[in-house]
Image 1 (cartoon, rainbow, N blue to C red):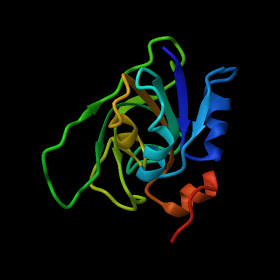
Image 2 (tube, rainbow, N blue to C red; image 1 turned 135 degrees about the horizontal axis):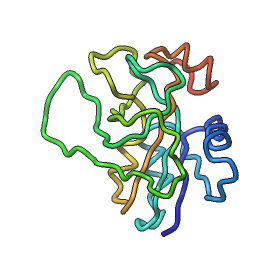
Image 3 (spheres, one colour; image 1 turned 180 degrees about the vertical axis):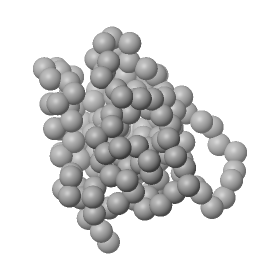
Length: 162
């Protein structure tokens, strides 16, 4: 099975260099958010093992914590409706024996600035990746901020405020 590393922004290449030195897997830079994910990955064969690595916020994990994501959901704190929880695949080939912890990732359509959820991370891509029907999806997120767009931008030089 082919592996593909998926990152949202060019700045996340440094995570690959740090945590996967010498990795020979192809890398796809998608852009931030759902539409960019769908457009970038729609033609990737579904038997590809997609590995998403990127930055994420957390309300209580220390900045710099590396999280292996074990399941992903959409974040919609104002309403409840039935939707599947998407379980992700652990990487068992020793590639990522470096994760500090496992946790749920909540994907959003905007940057999360506050949340009652703890012991989790927040991103803007993973649920959309996992929803596309790939046979295997794995993910690792480095906590870049504690729900602060300013702190995220300082570290990553990523997305700007509207």
